[in-house]
Length: 292
Image (cartoon, rainbow, N blue to C red; front, side, top):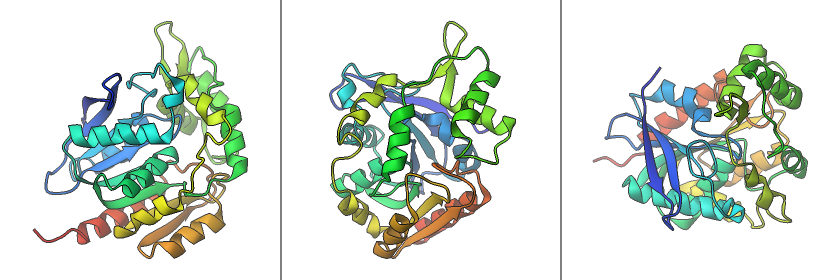
């Protein structure tokens, strides 16, 4: 297992200490910054980081209210534009002005906003099952489920609860797969219970009318055109439609569209199709780097 260093930075207003895992890699390549989905944390990118560490520096971010990042006093700050400000503060704190972004779901939206606001240069982008247009069926499912989990006495109980809830997303998962997913989503609390590893109030602004977006994100996506990109879509996704994915590929000539069969929202990035797509993106990103 690759080693990492726990590091922290402060939100722009100085009120929240936020956390990321820093896997060491060469300084002559742009680092990879991984931003997880709505209910996920740094562990979600752990297997990806462990595979790439050493050849690449990999930073696995925890957005406010997740994992070891502080919970916000105001739940209305759990919105993409605030996550964007937090990410800008991280880039400034870590003195990063060029990176390759990996974003799952919400993390991909944050990457689009970063590109659109021009705070940094992105040498490549991986969008995992997310686009500028989000399907209402998927949003309804997420609104119903986020922030409603209870605690469990054992990891097996948590895994079985996940299997019941997400069987349609990962129809080929066995118990070991569900256990691995549970250990990325949950944590052991001080009372010995297995509980969700995020502030359940993250659902509050998301459930408000227009809370999931409220803006046209196509211009933000168009800002990614300057560098190679890969879009990974689960064939069973209820968040990213095939039509939206095809339109993204049409608008971005440097985008590779990869569909993972028999997976919904979102692919784990451990599938053979995903692993190969990540490696191709990194090769293209390196080839596009200016000669020193």
